[in-house]
Image (cartoon, rainbow, N blue to C red):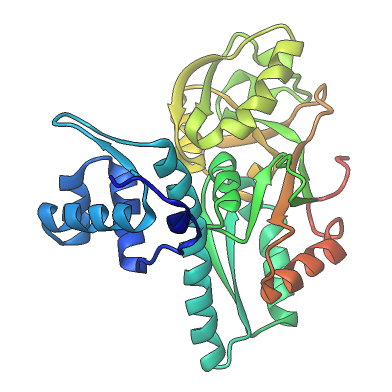
Length: 316
């Protein structure tokens, strides 16, 4: 790699979007063969593209050996910024295409289970009725992944458990869910008129996985600790449907958000917990420096209507 000179420092490197995309594939796979297969090109051609990109930038992006490929410090920074830049570019392309056919804007919306079975459909319906020419693209992801996607510019707004602590992010509370017990319909606890969390201390539990339900588990487990027990987790599953199915099968009991009342599952009883006064908050989050007109309209609508949806209310 050539040594930079003062004249190089003021020279703007030139490379095309194709090269940046190719580098991101390698950065994701850390393997030239797999990246080349995904790009439908040959490994030597991909190597030449990356080498030309490094020459244009004047830095090494990858450390290569016969056994491994790794990002350099420069490669880490370049990959993060490229994801942001390409996200903005894709938004510009779809924005231009939408405008050409009469659509005003497009909003990429992330959501998780508690949101889509809570206030989110009500908010989407209200926004669509007011701004019918704005397109909403919905993408399911757990809260943690949504927060990362928002910071990387891959989504415009997320509906997540808990706030995203950043001065560049707006957090708006849109839902409060109570904690409820999910019980097999023939379970002895299902017959009790009043159920306490401590009543479930010795029961086998079905919970969502850390990867899919990490945000919820970070709230639930301290509530259990405060009642003097750690759940005996005998089964984990990556989806709400899986949790309900395992409970219906009698594998164990579960604790879930109150929006479980909106699911209809034979064999599962949903009961409130009279001794738990904590709530599970769902926030709408978006970057304050995102200049999208459609996001501005959506954010204003959320701000004007948060608190008036069907689930943001005290538990009776």
